[in-house]
Image (cartoon, rainbow, N blue to C red; front, side):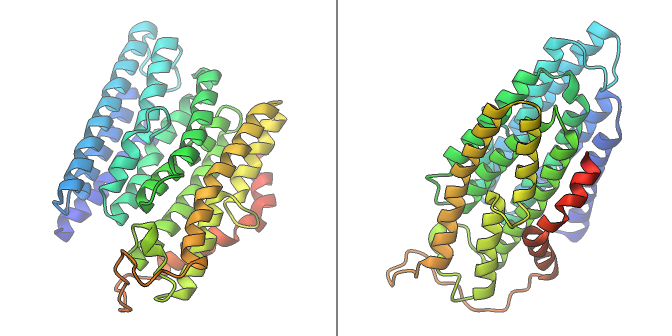
Length: 348
């Protein structure tokens, strides 16, 4: 892609997200989301592969549907209340419609079906943008309006997403689909606690972005998109393979890695709010997700690929990819648990 075109598209992505962050008016927030969608569409279809074009079409249709619902919800709310302010979402119909639209935007269950299909059709870097940056603007709107959304609806969305994210990833062999279901499960953790402690949602979103970035960059570095190719990576770069296993365990939320911190604090908050059944359900769904991360670790580090492997053994060539961002993200993914007391002090 032409570097000038790429610069314009990435600037538009930044502009769309910033516009939604800064807006207090529904139309401005909607415009920011639309700029975001329109900016990422050419990035998704840049390889002109039929799968990429199909993924772009699916993504565009779902995002356009969600944007239309947001516009309809905000118009209904303005009609009922006479207010276009984001903070004044007092009409129950508009509030429910708005929640459904944003759930569709970020891929919460039960409106998550587009997410694995779209991510599977993209290359790893565009998939990284879709899994991380594209979540920011909708989350800004959800956090602003969380207090006026029905708590039962948020709880249902959260629990369903963690369950679906765990179950869906169990029988997958494609790494991008596994990461899509991982994303759905993490979104569930963020949504479940948003009505009680929005700062924990931001913490979970931040750690999720760091861990997912580390995972996508690692897969890009080792040119891996399937589980059976993972079994051949240890011979090419043993150090990267061992750190990747730890990154995956961090995504699963195992101590003493960074991914344990948000889950621990969210479970603690749910217990404080006298919701032991929901807290137990969330902890059990985390175990389902952990199973497929362990499966990936097993394929990477504990199996030697058979001689009749279906995948092509990667050449031991020097990569042109810069390794500094990967090193920083991996370090953050593995070693931020000791700063938990500081974060607890800031969030309480």
